[in-house]
Length: 195
Length: 195
DNA sequence: TATTTGTTAGTGATCGTTCACAAACTTATA
DNA sequence: TATAAGTTTGTGAACGATCACTAACAAATA
Image (cartoon, rainbow over all chains, first blue to last red; front, top):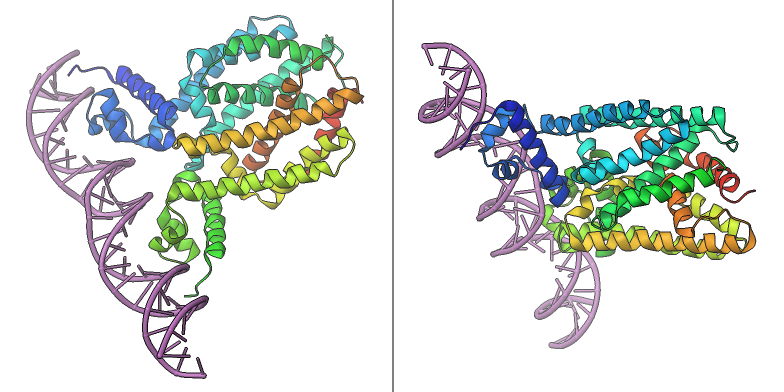
């Protein structure tokens, strides 16, 4: 029975929480099961998190952290079209490395329970859309884009990304998301930006 | 304490199950709460459904029924582009009238628990996509469509529909989905079908 | 020694489900 | 037509299991 620092344990606990949600759904996420997987007792969980909601907040923080890395990565690209590519591919690369997070994205029920969680989720969603709208606005300055609002375009792109991820998940990750990303890239360039 | 036929009760139970999921999320759907809302005892629920899973199957059957009406409605349209319009608008009209069903659509957790439920959901999804692909193929015969596969196009359309519904739900149904449908129609005609 | 991280044991609440039984409605028989 | 028999739809009480969470205490670490 090794003793870890709170930081290490918190990471372990969130990792296992994600595994449970991923494998058995959010409804199966119990402190009991979590404690068994982390190989500590139930009360030990409460040494590192205030309550169950706090654990979910920890999961959302991990997604927020992703947002920061995404923003940084976009800064490195100069051409707006490259930024769009990076926006899409970053999502796919990230999810290939963190499959368990796909389950959280679609687990609506996590967020209906608590106002705090719902607000945090909405922040993440709107932030990501704002990021995409900015990219599209930049593209519009350079290239001719059909008479569609940036809002609409962003929703089309996000919707397509989302449905692709969902298909990937429902197929038990049977194809390469990154390969799909390449063809999606071409699709949008053809479809929207007249390339 | 009035006695109803099984058919009537089953309808009541499913209606209230949908209300609970809609208002409080799937995690709050318990036989106890359900019985309170229907104003019968818990064991009475089991007179009309085998178990909880059976109740969810009843909800899914209601969605399947929708699929049949959609297919019929599409048969009445002759022009393929009208069919596409009808496909989109039918979804929106239906959901405006049945808001509670939007919650089920996004409640992933319902389906992760049971193999039977997951399979029934996948059938519904793939059936709807097949319907849309057929429409797109018809359009392709008549109009010039950019070099994109019907599969890809169907995913773009379904993704956009889905994200619009999600936005509608997250905004607490603060805008008219049908109005949005009109502008989506124009968007796709401009974007994809060179109108 | 003080603090942090862990344990065992137990809290009341709620879960889905079943039991034995009662009232209502339908059908068959006297 | 009255009544008996059978079926369907309801009830209260209770089942074992599990839920999130806590009090009290022990061991490891600084």
